[in-house]
Length: 213
Image (cartoon, rainbow, N blue to C red):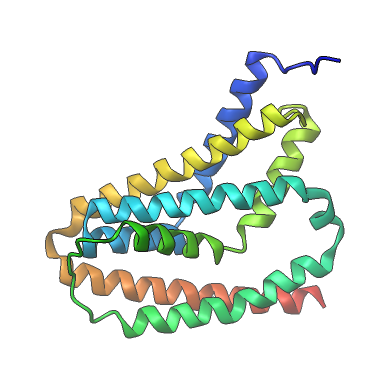
């Protein structure tokens, strides 16, 4: 028995939804785009693009998990609470790290492809808020009939999310290059901003835990 394939219109729609949601979701100031911006200032555009690639690859894996287990995550409050609790020490630890390293000077590295991909993947992995984001939107799109549950549509949707993340982070890297005329001072500022963002995110997680009681 032959499997029926979705129409090209639904396939294109799945790709565009993934691209748009990922691009817009990456634009707000956060751990991943600040890491890309900081890398762009410290090590150049090429190194920042490797970080962006690592982040986008990890994002696609997070989307896969979110789409596959959307119903289980939604119906199990203990999973959401566990992710919230784990995020607190992660954010605060990163905040301390970036604050202590705010005085470091920019440097260029020749071999940065593997390290860059690993750094981007780690930053994206620590973004625990990605799971509820993608669980909500993937469930909403399927409920509206804009995302079909067949493997092809889901695969195209996930591919779109990876490309959307990569484009948004590349934009951050490029804009950072344009403003990096005084790299030392800007790098100190970005490190301190990253430290502040991490601390604030940790406080937010504590607030979420208290509200869940």
